[in-house]
Length: 312
Length: 245
Image 1: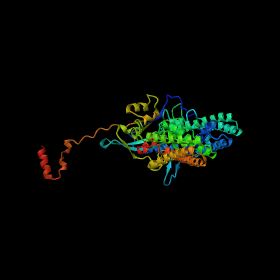
Image 2: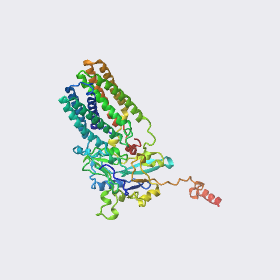
Image 3: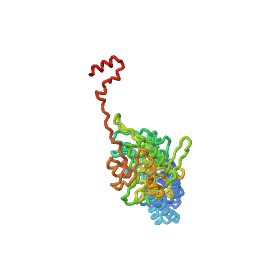
Image 4: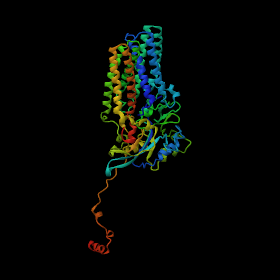
């Protein structure tokens, strides 16, 4: 599948924004991050900026961005519509949370924060389900996929929260969280790759079932229907990544591992060194995630290519 | 609404005979010709007169080789929307632009509310949907909804453009929900099948497999014998005839 930059950026940025929002709203009432309104507003501001930038970027992928508002109507059947509704609905408790933090009302901030955290989790789950619900893409139609979106949003959010808390000199808890989620993401991504690299299970479509010509024998394409490119093949037949997938996967694991390690160091180190380490950690986490998200698309194959190349 | 309508009795669709299809591309061409001015028209072409020409088509004709050696066959294979009974292209649509008609099961797009997100094309295993890159909206086969009910054209022509143009009669149109219809009987008689049934989309269109050919017999002994005409030397020819008596 074609890794459109607008979608790679959107899912990474808004995932990190929602993750940051979630951990801010969960850890703040527990007293595990700086409790002042200054930190609360800065963290909320960064989360909002990431979410809004991501959502705006996603409209760049549309053929008719001016009609994007229509996407809120079909939440009964469409995960994309549900994502849109959840994203917009989450802005309500986000604003209320910001006002409560500004007013210094701890109880109201805790309540609206929990609502915002729930909204963030639901939105990221919907994003994951957009991909997991697509049967023609074997690598996406997999039970691990939506959990991956949740885990990676939580990981990048925790790394960002830790980096911000570092400036306030109270980053031990979010840093420990980022280290744990980084290690989990490292293992999770390896497990996912092992799943999709395994031979496809029986019942996976082949050129023989796609054409029904398996009754005659092994089938291979002879003449293509057109000599030039089409939108369909550009969208579904992207092949570049498979050439470099080994190196790119190492880059992802390196980013996740480095973020986990420096977060762990920072959790114990404390002081200005911790602050510096956590900024490096957040950068490594986000960099690794951008490559991860690019690969998520580039390594995915669509059944339509069976008709063209005999492989998917 | 992108929720699917309750299953209808009427299931309009195509039956494509892979035995007779000659891969001439007439169906694809006439489809483009009619539909560029039809219900979901225009079907734009980019760089139409230079290198890298490409465009939006509803019908693409592939050719395959199936089987090995003497049993191998060349099969021409038109591919278009199958108007599935459970089309995910409809349910994934966030705007309600993609829909399946309750009355006859035709899957269509309302291009006035399509946002061009492309998710429906991702959801279609068969590659039936192509983006109109001029308008930024999705396009697909309409089963010539603007011909089959069109009372301003003579009744014999109220068929999809691909069906009436096929020079070998390899394409058939009808109600596949009615077991007594001509197309349903054809499917029953010829063992018509679904593409990628394991996807569970329940395509309405059916494909008729190439008929089995009689096996080529090994040349018989009689044929291996020389005939008098094969013997060029007149003396030997006379000898052969004399001795054959």
